[in-house]
Image 1 (cartoon, rainbow, N blue to C red):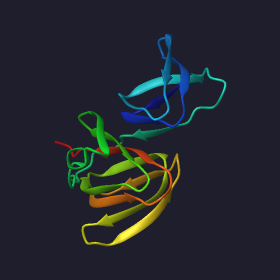
Image 2 (cartoon, one colour):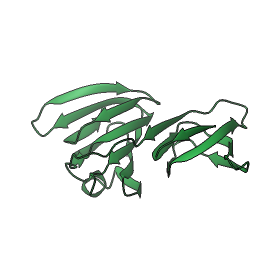
Image 3 (cartoon, rainbow, N blue to C red):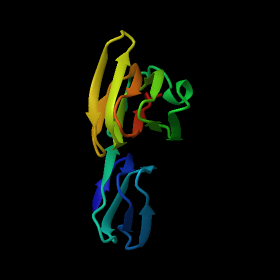
Image 4 (cartoon, rainbow, N blue to C red):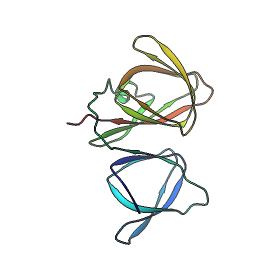
Length: 169
């Protein structure tokens, strides 16, 4: 048995898990690679029922942010950014940018980004400065609120889930 606070889980691989609770009950849960979910504080034990290891990134929501978002990527770039779900504490987006495609200037709040499939991305800030980064599936980045444009200058699709923290009300 172990405990978690509020959290968001991003599954990097398919998972079939037996989840056991302190009261002795258990249930089987199955998740697909590339999905994300929010869970309340919990105490449980996990057993992997699959033939292969599973991988997930767990973002534990330990503290609230005071930082205001610098925009709304889903509203400013609906072609690439889709709002998957929203809670009182987070907004979770999935962004897919094909090789050779570009996302216009858009904003984010304080965030954790989990790369599902990467490549080479060029981001350009409001000040016009650009930087290129190589990203691979499973990479995780933490970022402050920002506004930027992004171009996929690599040969593979860029696919990422971003968990943006919402300021405490």
